[in-house]
Length: 267
Image (cartoon, rainbow, N blue to C red; front, side, top):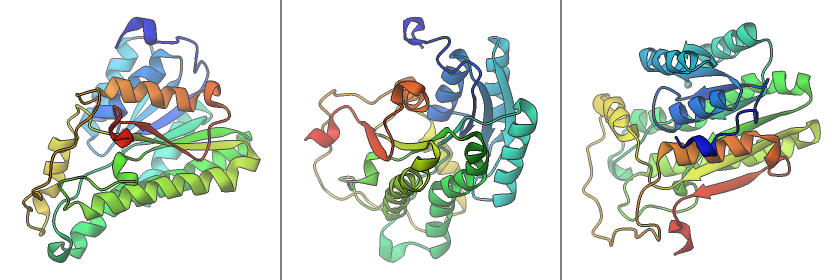
């Protein structure tokens, strides 16, 4: 992370929960928010990775709490929010980032595999918002940022990822609903929608899919997407967008999909 891009007092005194924070975009966001002054609850279903990121933040002088949380389980989410409130005494916002990938043709997709992807990617942000919102309402302000995808609005050229596309489309609409319903109470919501990102989500998703009954599919014979910037983003680049959206600098941005896709959707 480039030092010149860090705003050391941007989030001073704020407290954020970041899910899926043990790796990739979530870990980058947790580190950046901490460097910019926030206390961060680092939540991940893989508890050891969450602890490693929290330890790294603490070693750099920041404040962090590691929590093992499966966002598809309401009891886990409730405990995560309670632990964050108990540790830091307040909540300023949420980055609902935890996610996984789906695969397979629709006619071959096992219902349990479809439900697994939606339970993490869509139920997860819903449950996190459900349990964070009462704290934001009590404070009279707050921000919720979700992780969508270019798949929130377009279908990838290779096809065969209906569960992922459906879940990310739902995340965008959930975010808009939060913005409309809670805007009058001083709460904003935005959905960051990355394109390709250099992260380990693929490896984690492969681990998640080991129990799937749905067979892997052969990609459709379509031309690959061409990105004007001709590269994938880094997790730090997406984290910079998230930090901005969670900050007062984005005070009039709500209900929005913010695309960080290297120009892909401009084609």
